[in-house]
Image (cartoon, rainbow, N blue to C red; front, side):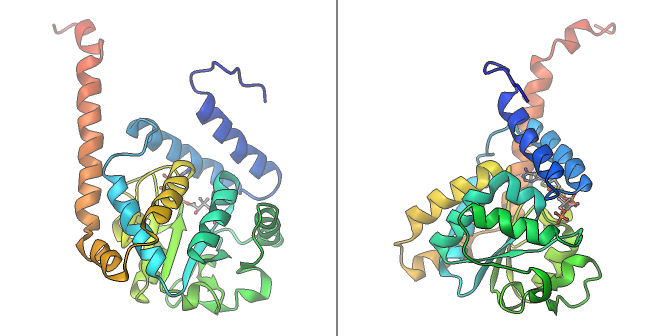
Length: 262
Ligand code: PTJ
Protein backbone atom coordinates (compact mmCIF):
# COMPACT_ATOMS: atom_id res chain seq x y z
CA UNK A 1 0.00 0.00 0.00
CA UNK A 2 1.25 3.46 -0.89
CA UNK A 3 1.20 5.57 2.27
CA UNK A 4 2.46 9.14 1.60
CA UNK A 5 5.66 9.97 3.54
CA UNK A 6 4.02 13.04 5.08
CA UNK A 7 0.77 11.32 6.06
CA UNK A 8 0.10 12.36 9.69
CA UNK A 9 -0.89 8.80 10.63
CA UNK A 10 1.82 7.08 8.58
CA UNK A 11 3.37 5.12 11.47
CA UNK A 12 0.03 3.76 12.62
CA UNK A 13 -0.95 2.85 9.04
CA UNK A 14 2.37 1.03 8.46
CA UNK A 15 1.80 -1.03 11.61
CA UNK A 16 -1.73 -1.79 10.39
CA UNK A 17 -0.30 -3.01 7.07
CA UNK A 18 1.94 -5.49 8.91
CA UNK A 19 -1.12 -6.97 10.61
CA UNK A 20 -3.03 -7.16 7.30
CA UNK A 21 -0.04 -8.85 5.58
CA UNK A 22 0.14 -11.29 8.49
CA UNK A 23 -3.54 -12.05 8.03
CA UNK A 24 -3.06 -12.67 4.29
CA UNK A 25 -0.12 -15.01 5.05
CA UNK A 26 -2.16 -17.05 7.55
CA UNK A 27 -0.13 -15.94 10.59
CA UNK A 28 -2.72 -13.55 12.07
CA UNK A 29 -6.31 -14.74 12.55
CA UNK A 30 -9.35 -12.59 11.66
CA UNK A 31 -9.92 -12.08 15.39
CA UNK A 32 -6.39 -10.62 15.52
CA UNK A 33 -7.54 -7.77 13.27
CA UNK A 34 -10.25 -6.92 15.78
CA UNK A 35 -7.81 -7.19 18.71
CA UNK A 36 -5.46 -4.81 16.85
CA UNK A 37 -8.28 -2.28 16.38
CA UNK A 38 -8.94 -2.33 20.11
CA UNK A 39 -5.24 -1.82 20.72
CA UNK A 40 -5.15 1.12 18.26
CA UNK A 41 -7.99 2.82 20.14
CA UNK A 42 -6.12 2.59 23.45
CA UNK A 43 -2.90 3.70 21.74
CA UNK A 44 -4.70 6.80 20.42
CA UNK A 45 -5.88 7.61 23.94
CA UNK A 46 -2.39 7.29 25.48
CA UNK A 47 -1.03 9.54 22.71
CA UNK A 48 0.91 6.79 20.86
CA UNK A 49 3.84 7.16 23.26
CA UNK A 50 4.96 5.00 26.16
CA UNK A 51 3.13 6.36 29.24
CA UNK A 52 5.75 7.64 31.76
CA UNK A 53 4.65 5.26 34.59
CA UNK A 54 5.14 2.29 32.22
CA UNK A 55 8.93 2.75 32.48
CA UNK A 56 8.67 1.52 36.08
CA UNK A 57 7.00 -1.67 34.85
CA UNK A 58 9.61 -2.12 32.12
CA UNK A 59 12.43 -1.79 34.68
CA UNK A 60 10.84 -4.45 36.91
CA UNK A 61 10.23 -6.69 33.88
CA UNK A 62 13.85 -6.36 32.77
CA UNK A 63 15.06 -7.25 36.28
CA UNK A 64 12.76 -10.31 36.41
CA UNK A 65 13.93 -11.54 33.00
CA UNK A 66 17.62 -11.11 33.87
CA UNK A 67 17.45 -13.12 37.10
CA UNK A 68 14.98 -15.74 35.81
CA UNK A 69 16.22 -19.33 35.75
CA UNK A 70 13.90 -20.43 32.96
CA UNK A 71 12.41 -17.43 31.17
CA UNK A 72 10.02 -17.98 28.25
CA UNK A 73 8.62 -15.51 25.73
CA UNK A 74 5.15 -16.65 24.64
CA UNK A 75 4.15 -15.53 21.14
CA UNK A 76 0.97 -15.42 19.06
CA UNK A 77 0.17 -14.29 15.52
CA UNK A 78 -0.14 -10.54 16.17
CA UNK A 79 3.03 -10.40 18.27
CA UNK A 80 5.33 -12.03 15.70
CA UNK A 81 4.28 -9.86 12.77
CA UNK A 82 4.59 -6.69 14.88
CA UNK A 83 7.79 -7.47 16.78
CA UNK A 84 9.28 -10.80 15.54
CA UNK A 85 12.87 -9.58 15.11
CA UNK A 86 12.88 -7.73 18.43
CA UNK A 87 11.46 -10.79 20.24
CA UNK A 88 14.32 -12.91 18.85
CA UNK A 89 16.85 -10.27 19.95
CA UNK A 90 15.38 -10.09 23.47
CA UNK A 91 15.36 -13.88 23.74
CA UNK A 92 19.05 -14.08 22.93
CA UNK A 93 20.01 -11.32 25.40
CA UNK A 94 18.14 -12.84 28.38
CA UNK A 95 18.57 -16.45 27.17
CA UNK A 96 14.82 -16.99 27.07
CA UNK A 97 13.09 -19.70 25.10
CA UNK A 98 10.45 -18.67 22.58
CA UNK A 99 7.20 -20.64 22.58
CA UNK A 100 4.22 -20.39 20.23
CA UNK A 101 0.99 -20.34 22.23
CA UNK A 102 -2.22 -19.65 20.36
CA UNK A 103 -5.78 -18.92 21.31
CA UNK A 104 -6.88 -20.00 17.80
CA UNK A 105 -4.82 -23.14 17.22
CA UNK A 106 -5.52 -23.81 13.54
CA UNK A 107 -3.44 -26.63 11.95
CA UNK A 108 -0.26 -25.36 10.26
CA UNK A 109 -0.55 -21.89 11.78
CA UNK A 110 1.96 -22.63 14.51
CA UNK A 111 4.34 -23.95 11.83
CA UNK A 112 3.97 -20.70 9.86
CA UNK A 113 4.68 -18.70 13.02
CA UNK A 114 7.74 -20.83 13.80
CA UNK A 115 9.05 -20.40 10.24
CA UNK A 116 8.49 -16.64 10.43
CA UNK A 117 10.51 -16.48 13.67
CA UNK A 118 13.27 -18.62 12.13
CA UNK A 119 13.49 -16.05 9.31
CA UNK A 120 13.81 -13.39 12.02
CA UNK A 121 16.86 -15.27 13.35
CA UNK A 122 15.45 -17.67 15.98
CA UNK A 123 17.18 -21.03 16.17
CA UNK A 124 14.62 -22.90 18.25
CA UNK A 125 10.90 -22.32 18.73
CA UNK A 126 8.87 -24.44 21.18
CA UNK A 127 5.16 -25.23 21.31
CA UNK A 128 4.79 -26.48 17.74
CA UNK A 129 2.89 -29.72 17.00
CA UNK A 130 3.59 -32.56 19.45
CA UNK A 131 5.93 -30.36 21.47
CA UNK A 132 2.85 -28.71 23.03
CA UNK A 133 2.14 -31.96 24.86
CA UNK A 134 1.65 -30.57 28.38
CA UNK A 135 -1.40 -28.72 29.71
CA UNK A 136 -1.96 -25.75 32.01
CA UNK A 137 -4.33 -27.03 34.74
CA UNK A 138 -7.92 -25.69 34.83
CA UNK A 139 -7.59 -23.89 31.49
CA UNK A 140 -10.12 -24.92 28.83
CA UNK A 141 -8.96 -22.85 25.81
CA UNK A 142 -6.38 -23.96 23.25
CA UNK A 143 -3.93 -21.80 25.15
CA UNK A 144 -3.71 -24.64 27.71
CA UNK A 145 -1.41 -26.61 25.35
CA UNK A 146 2.19 -25.85 26.30
CA UNK A 147 5.64 -27.32 25.93
CA UNK A 148 6.96 -29.27 28.95
CA UNK A 149 10.38 -27.73 28.17
CA UNK A 150 9.01 -24.19 27.90
CA UNK A 151 6.02 -22.55 29.56
CA UNK A 152 5.27 -25.53 31.84
CA UNK A 153 8.73 -25.40 33.42
CA UNK A 154 9.22 -21.61 33.23
CA UNK A 155 9.58 -19.36 36.27
CA UNK A 156 9.05 -16.12 34.30
CA UNK A 157 6.75 -15.85 31.26
CA UNK A 158 6.45 -12.78 29.03
CA UNK A 159 3.00 -12.64 27.44
CA UNK A 160 2.34 -9.93 24.86
CA UNK A 161 -1.33 -9.51 23.73
CA UNK A 162 -2.78 -12.06 26.04
CA UNK A 163 -6.16 -13.19 27.30
CA UNK A 164 -6.93 -12.98 31.00
CA UNK A 165 -7.63 -16.68 31.63
CA UNK A 166 -4.14 -17.93 30.91
CA UNK A 167 -2.50 -15.12 32.88
CA UNK A 168 -4.59 -16.11 35.89
CA UNK A 169 -3.76 -19.81 35.43
CA UNK A 170 -0.02 -19.12 35.10
CA UNK A 171 -0.07 -16.99 38.26
CA UNK A 172 -1.81 -19.85 40.10
CA UNK A 173 1.07 -22.09 38.99
CA UNK A 174 3.44 -19.74 40.85
CA UNK A 175 4.99 -18.09 37.80
CA UNK A 176 5.94 -14.44 37.37
CA UNK A 177 3.83 -13.18 34.45
CA UNK A 178 4.89 -10.07 32.53
CA UNK A 179 2.07 -8.80 30.29
CA UNK A 180 2.25 -6.26 27.46
CA UNK A 181 -1.22 -4.84 26.87
CA UNK A 182 -2.38 -1.43 25.68
CA UNK A 183 -5.56 -1.84 27.72
CA UNK A 184 -4.89 -1.09 31.41
CA UNK A 185 -8.42 -2.29 32.29
CA UNK A 186 -8.14 -5.81 30.84
CA UNK A 187 -8.15 -8.89 33.07
CA UNK A 188 -4.65 -9.66 31.79
CA UNK A 189 -3.43 -6.24 32.95
CA UNK A 190 -5.11 -6.66 36.33
CA UNK A 191 -3.88 -10.21 36.94
CA UNK A 192 -0.30 -10.06 35.71
CA UNK A 193 2.62 -9.71 38.12
CA UNK A 194 4.05 -6.88 35.98
CA UNK A 195 1.95 -5.08 33.36
CA UNK A 196 3.59 -3.05 30.61
CA UNK A 197 0.84 -0.78 29.27
CA UNK A 198 2.23 0.05 25.85
CA UNK A 199 2.22 -0.99 22.21
CA UNK A 200 4.32 -4.14 21.78
CA UNK A 201 6.07 -2.31 18.89
CA UNK A 202 7.50 0.28 21.33
CA UNK A 203 7.67 -1.84 24.48
CA UNK A 204 10.03 -4.60 23.29
CA UNK A 205 12.83 -2.25 22.07
CA UNK A 206 12.64 -0.29 25.36
CA UNK A 207 12.71 -3.58 27.28
CA UNK A 208 15.84 -4.62 25.34
CA UNK A 209 17.60 -1.31 26.15
CA UNK A 210 16.62 -1.61 29.82
CA UNK A 211 17.92 -5.19 30.03
CA UNK A 212 21.23 -4.06 28.52
CA UNK A 213 21.45 -1.24 31.10
CA UNK A 214 20.63 -3.47 34.10
CA UNK A 215 22.43 -6.64 33.04
CA UNK A 216 25.55 -5.94 35.08
CA UNK A 217 23.78 -5.02 38.31
CA UNK A 218 24.06 -7.48 41.20
CA UNK A 219 21.37 -10.08 41.80
CA UNK A 220 20.56 -8.33 45.10
CA UNK A 221 19.94 -5.02 43.29
CA UNK A 222 17.66 -6.69 40.76
CA UNK A 223 15.73 -8.57 43.44
CA UNK A 224 15.28 -5.28 45.24
CA UNK A 225 13.75 -3.67 42.12
CA UNK A 226 11.22 -6.52 41.88
CA UNK A 227 10.43 -6.48 45.62
CA UNK A 228 9.71 -2.73 45.58
CA UNK A 229 7.55 -2.94 42.45
CA UNK A 230 3.79 -2.62 42.98
CA UNK A 231 1.73 -3.44 39.88
CA UNK A 232 -1.55 -2.11 41.25
CA UNK A 233 0.08 1.22 42.02
CA UNK A 234 1.71 1.49 38.57
CA UNK A 235 -1.58 0.61 36.81
CA UNK A 236 -3.25 3.31 38.90
CA UNK A 237 -0.61 5.82 37.74
CA UNK A 238 -1.22 4.84 34.10
CA UNK A 239 -4.98 5.39 34.50
CA UNK A 240 -4.25 8.74 36.20
CA UNK A 241 -2.00 9.64 33.22
CA UNK A 242 -4.84 8.80 30.79
CA UNK A 243 -7.27 10.80 32.91
CA UNK A 244 -5.03 13.89 32.92
CA UNK A 245 -4.58 13.63 29.13
CA UNK A 246 -8.34 13.51 28.65
CA UNK A 247 -8.80 16.44 31.03
CA UNK A 248 -6.31 18.52 28.97
CA UNK A 249 -8.02 17.49 25.72
CA UNK A 250 -11.40 18.53 27.09
CA UNK A 251 -10.04 22.02 27.88
CA UNK A 252 -8.49 22.47 24.45
CA UNK A 253 -11.51 21.26 22.59
CA UNK A 254 -13.55 23.94 20.84
CA UNK A 255 -16.58 21.79 21.51
CA UNK A 256 -17.20 23.84 24.66
CA UNK A 257 -17.13 27.15 22.78
CA UNK A 258 -19.66 25.87 20.26
CA UNK A 259 -21.98 24.57 22.94
CA UNK A 260 -25.49 26.13 22.59
CA UNK A 261 -25.66 26.28 26.39
CA UNK A 262 -22.84 28.85 26.57
O1 PTJ B 1 -2.80 -15.53 17.55
P1 PTJ B 1 -3.85 -16.02 18.51
O2 PTJ B 1 -4.68 -17.13 17.94
O3 PTJ B 1 -3.27 -16.45 19.85
O4 PTJ B 1 -4.85 -14.82 18.82
C1 PTJ B 1 -4.32 -13.59 19.24
C2 PTJ B 1 -5.43 -12.61 19.69
C3 PTJ B 1 -4.76 -11.25 19.89
C4 PTJ B 1 -6.48 -12.53 18.59
C5 PTJ B 1 -6.05 -13.14 21.00
O5 PTJ B 1 -5.05 -13.27 21.97
C6 PTJ B 1 -7.15 -12.24 21.49
O6 PTJ B 1 -8.31 -12.38 21.13
O7 PTJ B 1 -6.75 -11.28 22.32
P2 PTJ B 1 -7.77 -10.26 23.05
O8 PTJ B 1 -8.47 -10.99 24.15
O9 PTJ B 1 -8.55 -9.50 22.04
O10 PTJ B 1 -6.75 -9.28 23.73
C7 PTJ B 1 -5.81 -8.58 23.04
C8 PTJ B 1 -5.35 -7.40 23.93
O11 PTJ B 1 -4.17 -6.90 23.33
C9 PTJ B 1 -6.36 -6.26 23.99
O12 PTJ B 1 -6.48 -5.80 25.33
C10 PTJ B 1 -5.75 -5.15 23.12
O13 PTJ B 1 -6.01 -3.87 23.62
C11 PTJ B 1 -4.27 -5.47 23.24
N1 PTJ B 1 -3.48 -5.09 22.06
C12 PTJ B 1 -3.85 -5.11 20.75
N2 PTJ B 1 -2.84 -4.71 19.96
C13 PTJ B 1 -1.79 -4.45 20.78
C14 PTJ B 1 -2.19 -4.70 22.13
N3 PTJ B 1 -1.37 -4.55 23.17
C15 PTJ B 1 -0.12 -4.16 22.90
N4 PTJ B 1 0.35 -3.90 21.65
C16 PTJ B 1 -0.46 -4.03 20.57
N5 PTJ B 1 0.01 -3.78 19.34
